[in-house]
Image 1: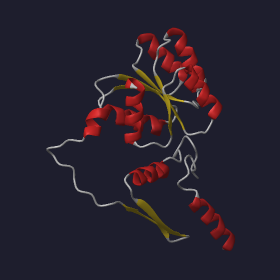
Image 2: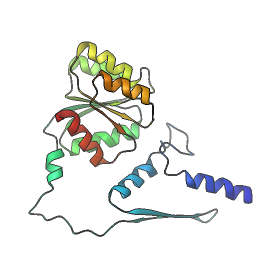
Image 3: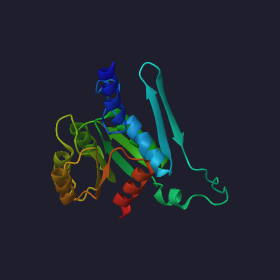
Image 4: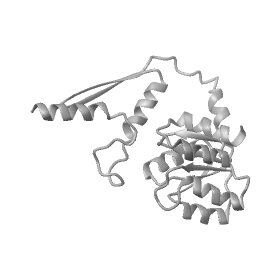
Length: 205
C-alpha cells in the first residue's frame, strides 16, 4: 500500500508537465491538457488547488481573481490590435489536438487558416499557394523536421515568413531555424493570447 501511495504521489507531482501522460500517445492523449489549463489560470492571476486520494478520486479547483467586466462601450484595444485581417496562415503540426487548437484560435482572430500534419503536405500546399505566414512545429514526427522543411521552402520562397512552435528545448535547432529567417519561437503549451501576439509579431514586426 505504501509503495502504491509513493508511486501515486510521483504521478501527482508531474501532471502539469508538458507531454506527461499515462495514456497511449497518439490515441487518447498528448499530455498537454493540464499544462494548458495551468498556463491559462496563471496568465489570469489565479491558482489551482488539487486534492486527490487513492481509491476516492480527484478534485481540481480553479481560483481566479474577481475583476470588473469590460465596458461594452470600450472594446479591448489588445483584441483589435491582435486580430487578423484575412492573412493566410499555414499550420504545419503533426499533433492533432494542437493543430485543431491553433486552427480554431486563428480563425476566431480573423485569419484564413489551412492546416496539414507533415512536411510533404505542406510542400504540396505551397505549390498551389504561398501563405502569409507558416506556423511551423519544429519537431515534426512524420518525415522531415520543421527546420528541414523551412530550409526546403526557402529555396522556392526565400522571403517566406515563419513562426516556430515547439515543446522541446532543442536550442541548436531553434537557433538554426531562427538564423534561416523564422521570426520567433513560441513555446508549447501556449495560451490563445500568446499565440495571437506571436503571430501578429511575426507578420508585422
